[in-house]
Length: 332
Image (cartoon, rainbow, N blue to C red; front, side):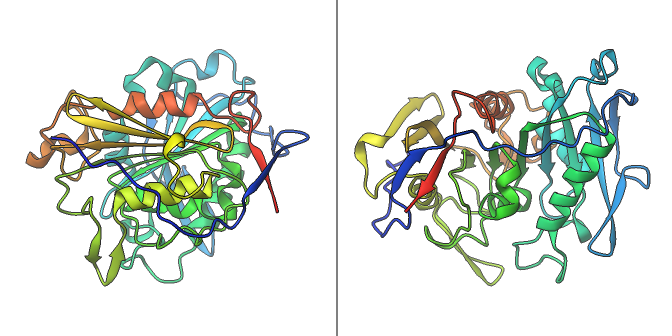
Protein backbone atom coordinates (compact mmCIF):
# COMPACT_ATOMS: atom_id res chain seq x y z
CA UNK A 1 0.00 0.00 0.00
CA UNK A 2 1.29 3.46 -0.81
CA UNK A 3 -0.03 6.95 -0.52
CA UNK A 4 -0.36 8.98 -3.69
CA UNK A 5 2.33 11.57 -4.30
CA UNK A 6 1.23 14.92 -2.88
CA UNK A 7 0.65 17.75 -5.31
CA UNK A 8 1.14 21.41 -4.47
CA UNK A 9 -2.02 23.25 -5.42
CA UNK A 10 -1.81 25.83 -8.13
CA UNK A 11 -2.25 29.38 -6.96
CA UNK A 12 -0.56 32.69 -6.54
CA UNK A 13 2.38 32.74 -4.20
CA UNK A 14 2.16 35.94 -2.25
CA UNK A 15 5.90 36.36 -1.75
CA UNK A 16 8.15 35.03 -4.47
CA UNK A 17 11.59 36.62 -4.27
CA UNK A 18 14.16 35.65 -1.69
CA UNK A 19 17.34 37.26 -0.39
CA UNK A 20 19.59 35.99 2.38
CA UNK A 21 19.25 37.95 5.59
CA UNK A 22 22.10 40.27 6.42
CA UNK A 23 22.07 38.80 9.92
CA UNK A 24 20.17 35.89 11.51
CA UNK A 25 16.77 36.32 13.08
CA UNK A 26 17.00 36.27 16.86
CA UNK A 27 15.30 37.57 19.95
CA UNK A 28 16.69 39.49 22.88
CA UNK A 29 17.05 36.60 25.26
CA UNK A 30 15.84 37.00 28.84
CA UNK A 31 18.30 35.00 30.92
CA UNK A 32 16.97 36.03 34.34
CA UNK A 33 15.95 32.43 35.06
CA UNK A 34 19.52 31.17 34.74
CA UNK A 35 21.35 30.10 37.87
CA UNK A 36 18.33 28.67 39.68
CA UNK A 37 18.14 24.97 40.47
CA UNK A 38 14.99 22.88 40.00
CA UNK A 39 14.03 19.36 40.99
CA UNK A 40 14.63 16.97 38.12
CA UNK A 41 11.86 14.88 36.58
CA UNK A 42 8.25 15.53 35.63
CA UNK A 43 6.15 18.03 37.59
CA UNK A 44 2.47 18.09 36.73
CA UNK A 45 0.35 21.15 36.13
CA UNK A 46 -0.57 22.78 39.46
CA UNK A 47 -0.55 26.14 41.23
CA UNK A 48 3.26 26.05 41.38
CA UNK A 49 3.53 25.67 37.63
CA UNK A 50 1.19 28.48 36.68
CA UNK A 51 0.98 32.06 35.44
CA UNK A 52 -1.58 34.74 34.70
CA UNK A 53 -2.55 35.24 31.06
CA UNK A 54 -5.64 36.90 29.63
CA UNK A 55 -7.16 37.27 33.08
CA UNK A 56 -6.92 33.51 33.71
CA UNK A 57 -4.66 31.31 35.78
CA UNK A 58 -2.97 29.07 33.24
CA UNK A 59 -1.07 25.92 34.22
CA UNK A 60 1.54 23.67 32.67
CA UNK A 61 3.47 20.50 33.37
CA UNK A 62 7.24 20.44 32.93
CA UNK A 63 9.99 17.88 32.57
CA UNK A 64 13.39 18.97 33.91
CA UNK A 65 16.23 16.76 32.63
CA UNK A 66 18.44 15.01 35.15
CA UNK A 67 21.47 17.01 34.04
CA UNK A 68 19.82 20.43 34.48
CA UNK A 69 21.30 21.17 37.91
CA UNK A 70 24.81 20.17 36.81
CA UNK A 71 25.01 23.66 35.31
CA UNK A 72 21.89 25.79 35.94
CA UNK A 73 23.54 28.66 34.03
CA UNK A 74 23.63 26.64 30.81
CA UNK A 75 20.77 27.71 28.47
CA UNK A 76 18.51 24.77 27.62
CA UNK A 77 16.58 24.00 24.48
CA UNK A 78 12.81 24.10 24.99
CA UNK A 79 9.83 22.19 23.61
CA UNK A 80 6.23 23.28 24.23
CA UNK A 81 4.11 20.15 23.68
CA UNK A 82 0.32 20.59 23.39
CA UNK A 83 -2.18 17.84 24.31
CA UNK A 84 -5.21 16.85 22.25
CA UNK A 85 -8.86 17.68 22.94
CA UNK A 86 -9.94 16.37 26.36
CA UNK A 87 -6.28 15.65 27.09
CA UNK A 88 -4.00 16.75 29.90
CA UNK A 89 -0.31 17.72 30.26
CA UNK A 90 0.41 14.34 31.88
CA UNK A 91 -1.28 12.51 29.02
CA UNK A 92 0.83 14.32 26.45
CA UNK A 93 3.98 13.78 28.52
CA UNK A 94 3.29 10.04 28.28
CA UNK A 95 2.33 10.35 24.62
CA UNK A 96 5.39 11.99 23.06
CA UNK A 97 7.76 10.63 25.73
CA UNK A 98 10.71 12.86 24.87
CA UNK A 99 12.30 11.75 28.15
CA UNK A 100 12.74 8.21 26.78
CA UNK A 101 15.42 9.28 24.31
CA UNK A 102 18.99 10.42 25.09
CA UNK A 103 18.73 13.51 22.87
CA UNK A 104 15.41 14.33 24.52
CA UNK A 105 17.43 15.03 27.67
CA UNK A 106 18.83 18.11 25.90
CA UNK A 107 15.44 19.83 26.31
CA UNK A 108 13.21 21.27 28.93
CA UNK A 109 9.83 19.90 27.84
CA UNK A 110 6.77 21.91 28.87
CA UNK A 111 3.18 20.64 28.58
CA UNK A 112 0.66 23.52 28.65
CA UNK A 113 -2.88 22.87 29.87
CA UNK A 114 -5.70 24.04 27.64
CA UNK A 115 -8.73 25.80 29.09
CA UNK A 116 -11.48 23.15 29.34
CA UNK A 117 -8.89 20.74 27.87
CA UNK A 118 -8.95 22.26 24.38
CA UNK A 119 -7.05 24.79 22.28
CA UNK A 120 -7.87 27.89 20.30
CA UNK A 121 -8.49 27.27 16.58
CA UNK A 122 -10.94 24.36 17.05
CA UNK A 123 -14.72 24.95 16.78
CA UNK A 124 -15.27 23.49 20.26
CA UNK A 125 -12.59 25.61 21.99
CA UNK A 126 -13.74 27.86 24.82
CA UNK A 127 -14.64 31.25 23.40
CA UNK A 128 -12.59 34.30 24.28
CA UNK A 129 -9.46 32.33 25.25
CA UNK A 130 -6.33 33.61 23.51
CA UNK A 131 -3.93 30.68 23.48
CA UNK A 132 -1.54 32.49 21.14
CA UNK A 133 -1.04 35.17 23.80
CA UNK A 134 -0.84 32.49 26.47
CA UNK A 135 1.98 30.86 24.53
CA UNK A 136 3.86 34.16 24.32
CA UNK A 137 3.25 34.80 28.03
CA UNK A 138 4.33 31.27 28.90
CA UNK A 139 7.62 31.70 27.05
CA UNK A 140 8.29 34.94 28.93
CA UNK A 141 7.44 33.22 32.24
CA UNK A 142 9.70 30.26 31.48
CA UNK A 143 12.64 32.52 30.60
CA UNK A 144 12.25 34.18 34.00
CA UNK A 145 12.09 30.84 35.81
CA UNK A 146 14.44 28.53 33.90
CA UNK A 147 17.60 28.98 31.82
CA UNK A 148 16.19 28.97 28.26
CA UNK A 149 18.09 28.99 24.96
CA UNK A 150 15.82 31.31 22.98
CA UNK A 151 17.38 30.28 19.67
CA UNK A 152 16.20 26.69 20.20
CA UNK A 153 12.49 26.88 21.07
CA UNK A 154 10.12 24.38 19.43
CA UNK A 155 6.42 23.48 19.43
CA UNK A 156 4.78 20.08 19.07
CA UNK A 157 1.31 18.69 19.60
CA UNK A 158 -1.18 15.95 18.85
CA UNK A 159 -4.69 16.24 17.34
CA UNK A 160 -6.26 19.49 18.61
CA UNK A 161 -2.83 20.33 20.07
CA UNK A 162 -1.29 19.71 16.66
CA UNK A 163 -3.90 21.93 15.04
CA UNK A 164 -3.01 24.66 17.51
CA UNK A 165 0.69 24.24 16.64
CA UNK A 166 -0.27 24.85 12.99
CA UNK A 167 -2.30 27.90 14.08
CA UNK A 168 0.75 29.11 16.03
CA UNK A 169 3.05 28.58 13.06
CA UNK A 170 0.69 30.68 10.94
CA UNK A 171 0.82 33.58 13.40
CA UNK A 172 3.34 36.25 14.36
CA UNK A 173 3.48 34.58 17.80
CA UNK A 174 5.24 31.73 16.01
CA UNK A 175 8.25 33.92 15.27
CA UNK A 176 9.87 32.83 18.53
CA UNK A 177 9.92 29.17 17.43
CA UNK A 178 12.59 27.49 15.32
CA UNK A 179 10.43 24.54 14.16
CA UNK A 180 7.00 22.95 14.55
CA UNK A 181 5.94 19.27 14.70
CA UNK A 182 2.47 17.72 14.73
CA UNK A 183 0.85 14.28 14.88
CA UNK A 184 -2.70 13.58 13.65
CA UNK A 185 -3.20 17.34 13.47
CA UNK A 186 -6.79 18.64 13.64
CA UNK A 187 -6.38 21.50 11.17
CA UNK A 188 -9.65 23.34 11.68
CA UNK A 189 -8.16 26.81 11.21
CA UNK A 190 -6.10 26.20 8.04
CA UNK A 191 -8.10 26.72 4.87
CA UNK A 192 -5.70 27.90 2.17
CA UNK A 193 -2.17 28.68 1.11
CA UNK A 194 -2.64 32.44 1.49
CA UNK A 195 -4.22 32.31 4.94
CA UNK A 196 -1.09 32.39 7.09
CA UNK A 197 0.32 35.53 8.67
CA UNK A 198 3.90 34.20 8.98
CA UNK A 199 6.52 36.75 7.96
CA UNK A 200 9.25 34.19 7.26
CA UNK A 201 9.37 30.48 6.36
CA UNK A 202 8.53 27.85 8.95
CA UNK A 203 10.09 24.41 9.43
CA UNK A 204 7.07 22.07 9.48
CA UNK A 205 6.85 18.34 10.33
CA UNK A 206 3.66 16.27 10.50
CA UNK A 207 2.74 12.56 10.77
CA UNK A 208 -0.74 11.27 10.02
CA UNK A 209 -2.36 7.86 9.88
CA UNK A 210 -4.16 7.03 6.66
CA UNK A 211 -6.67 5.02 8.73
CA UNK A 212 -7.43 7.98 11.00
CA UNK A 213 -11.22 8.04 11.37
CA UNK A 214 -11.19 10.97 13.82
CA UNK A 215 -9.27 13.50 11.73
CA UNK A 216 -9.43 12.01 8.26
CA UNK A 217 -6.28 12.03 6.16
CA UNK A 218 -8.47 13.09 3.26
CA UNK A 219 -10.20 15.97 5.03
CA UNK A 220 -13.88 16.76 5.04
CA UNK A 221 -16.55 18.17 7.40
CA UNK A 222 -16.14 17.80 11.16
CA UNK A 223 -17.59 19.75 14.08
CA UNK A 224 -19.15 22.27 11.71
CA UNK A 225 -15.84 23.04 9.98
CA UNK A 226 -14.07 21.74 6.86
CA UNK A 227 -10.75 19.98 7.40
CA UNK A 228 -8.19 20.07 4.59
CA UNK A 229 -6.80 17.04 2.82
CA UNK A 230 -3.41 16.41 4.46
CA UNK A 231 -1.52 16.17 1.17
CA UNK A 232 -3.02 19.46 0.05
CA UNK A 233 -2.17 21.13 3.37
CA UNK A 234 1.46 19.97 3.14
CA UNK A 235 1.55 21.56 -0.31
CA UNK A 236 0.30 24.82 1.15
CA UNK A 237 3.19 24.89 3.61
CA UNK A 238 5.66 24.21 0.79
CA UNK A 239 4.33 27.25 -1.05
CA UNK A 240 4.42 29.35 2.12
CA UNK A 241 8.07 28.37 2.49
CA UNK A 242 9.02 29.42 -1.03
CA UNK A 243 8.33 26.46 -3.33
CA UNK A 244 6.61 27.25 -6.59
CA UNK A 245 3.23 25.68 -7.26
CA UNK A 246 3.48 22.19 -8.81
CA UNK A 247 7.25 22.15 -8.26
CA UNK A 248 8.38 18.60 -9.05
CA UNK A 249 12.08 19.12 -8.40
CA UNK A 250 11.54 20.56 -4.90
CA UNK A 251 9.82 17.40 -3.60
CA UNK A 252 11.30 14.03 -2.64
CA UNK A 253 9.29 10.93 -1.76
CA UNK A 254 10.85 8.01 0.12
CA UNK A 255 9.09 4.67 0.58
CA UNK A 256 9.62 2.94 3.89
CA UNK A 257 8.12 -0.16 5.44
CA UNK A 258 4.64 0.87 6.55
CA UNK A 259 4.91 4.56 5.73
CA UNK A 260 6.06 7.15 3.23
CA UNK A 261 8.14 10.31 3.77
CA UNK A 262 7.45 13.39 1.66
CA UNK A 263 10.00 16.21 1.91
CA UNK A 264 10.05 19.67 0.34
CA UNK A 265 13.16 21.82 -0.07
CA UNK A 266 12.15 25.41 -0.64
CA UNK A 267 13.87 28.78 -0.85
CA UNK A 268 17.28 27.25 -0.22
CA UNK A 269 16.05 25.41 2.90
CA UNK A 270 16.49 21.63 2.59
CA UNK A 271 13.60 19.46 3.80
CA UNK A 272 11.96 22.45 5.46
CA UNK A 273 8.56 20.71 5.17
CA UNK A 274 8.32 16.99 5.91
CA UNK A 275 5.35 14.67 6.17
CA UNK A 276 5.07 11.03 7.25
CA UNK A 277 1.94 9.24 6.04
CA UNK A 278 1.56 5.99 7.95
CA UNK A 279 -0.53 3.53 6.00
CA UNK A 280 -2.24 1.49 8.74
CA UNK A 281 -2.25 4.01 11.60
CA UNK A 282 -5.30 5.54 13.24
CA UNK A 283 -5.61 8.77 15.26
CA UNK A 284 -2.32 8.45 17.11
CA UNK A 285 1.11 9.75 17.96
CA UNK A 286 3.08 7.05 16.09
CA UNK A 287 5.08 4.70 18.30
CA UNK A 288 7.09 1.60 17.42
CA UNK A 289 7.10 0.40 21.03
CA UNK A 290 3.51 0.92 22.16
CA UNK A 291 4.71 2.68 25.30
CA UNK A 292 2.84 5.93 24.71
CA UNK A 293 -0.60 6.92 26.00
CA UNK A 294 -2.17 6.26 22.61
CA UNK A 295 -1.07 2.60 22.70
CA UNK A 296 -4.04 1.68 24.89
CA UNK A 297 -6.32 2.32 21.93
CA UNK A 298 -6.85 -0.53 19.50
CA UNK A 299 -6.47 1.65 16.41
CA UNK A 300 -2.91 2.55 17.45
CA UNK A 301 -1.58 -0.95 16.87
CA UNK A 302 0.63 0.07 13.94
CA UNK A 303 4.30 -0.08 15.00
CA UNK A 304 6.04 0.90 11.76
CA UNK A 305 7.12 4.41 12.83
CA UNK A 306 8.66 5.70 16.05
CA UNK A 307 7.80 9.36 15.65
CA UNK A 308 9.43 10.96 18.72
CA UNK A 309 13.05 10.46 17.55
CA UNK A 310 11.97 11.77 14.14
CA UNK A 311 10.69 14.93 15.83
CA UNK A 312 13.87 15.32 17.89
CA UNK A 313 16.03 14.87 14.80
CA UNK A 314 13.96 17.44 12.90
CA UNK A 315 14.23 19.94 15.74
CA UNK A 316 17.99 19.43 15.93
CA UNK A 317 18.32 20.75 12.37
CA UNK A 318 16.65 24.09 13.05
CA UNK A 319 17.71 27.11 15.04
CA UNK A 320 16.95 30.80 14.76
CA UNK A 321 20.68 31.38 14.27
CA UNK A 322 22.15 28.14 12.93
CA UNK A 323 24.13 28.01 9.70
CA UNK A 324 22.37 24.90 8.45
CA UNK A 325 18.96 26.29 9.29
CA UNK A 326 19.69 29.89 8.29
CA UNK A 327 16.35 31.53 7.61
CA UNK A 328 15.89 33.60 4.50
CA UNK A 329 14.08 36.91 4.71
CA UNK A 330 11.07 37.46 2.51
CA UNK A 331 11.26 40.36 0.09
CA UNK A 332 8.74 41.61 -2.41
